[in-house]
Amino acid sequence: MELSAEYLREKLQRDLEAEHVEDTTLNRCSCSFRVLVVSAKFEGKPLLQRHRLVNACLAEELPHIHAFEQKTLTPDQWARERQK
Image: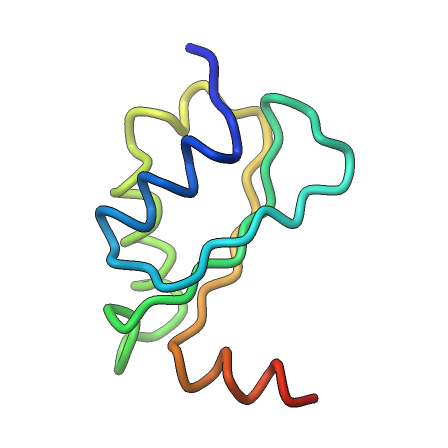
């Protein structure tokens, strides 16, 4: 399975209604990804539940990914972080 940052971005935006998905991977390895996902679906959910939502969304893709790091924020958290 050939994965790309664009493919993962589109899937997360569609399935999690993410308003922002950013690939923050430094080395651009095709099987290693670091993402920032901003979604209202994370409101009121602890970190573990947020990560489970992302993992469930990418359940078919994760077995083909060597390394996956995620940061999950609500829209309010993202707005505050951008103001820093």
